Image (tube, rainbow, N blue to C red; front, side, top):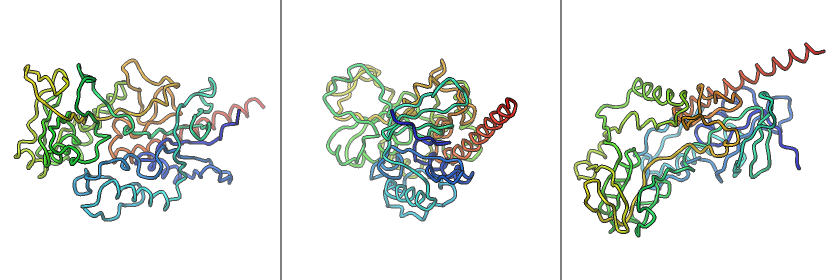
Length: 374
């Protein structure tokens, strides 16, 4: 059995949050693994084949003119964007240039299958099993996001639907639905954006579990702070985090107002069952459909952390800022309140600062103990 590669801090994921963490590790003096110059070392493992994180997979029609504001990566501002360029292309290029300019040490593609404890020592190393062998790390920053874990609700009769079902994660373009009736399920920004887009080429219906909340005003910093605070309170209690959008509501834009005027955003309460050729409505009626597009969000991709048994009775993970309350060696960023791009930047910095402080405290205890016993 080969000896695990040893590193001080290991980061899983190289999206916005992971790159932020890598940037702040370098600012704190951490060196890429293998530097062998006496400094503490870090490495980033990323499951993608290239830079960009989840942005690599966004649909081509999501242009920079219509994508939600994307925060700059720390230290290097985004270049000016062509409003007509697909966000997947622009942001993938921006992330790649960022990695190269800062000399971030990222290994890809590397799939992490499990994170486990080496032994019972709370100050010992964590073992990270991956497609590129096993790593041993003193601290772990997990930035795996949500894109790889789309959430599919379960409804009676779902398996018998003769049409097509797909999740937003699999969406390519509206053109593939031309001439078909498309049901879009979900109350978030992706749902309304895709309703507008798909309705340009075919007929649509919109279903949500709750009545959507619309905002006429722009989202103020205070409103953002209040929304994030609500999500933070949930994770402190060990409850599964809600999305920030579920707290803030949807903001009217000129594009969405035009869609509403066309009758596209007439929401219906959730259907009660799926039948071979459509859905059974809550009032008992039937709606024929060819496609059901589930814009029902994502869950945190944390299955590889299962051996650590971090989940609380409420189903979530009790957090203290970015730190897992029950396991101070592990920080989660891009999770819960830090799932937005601006939140991911802040979380990357906070996680590094907290983890460095903890590692320093462990070193102090170990040094004191060594002196005491000599």
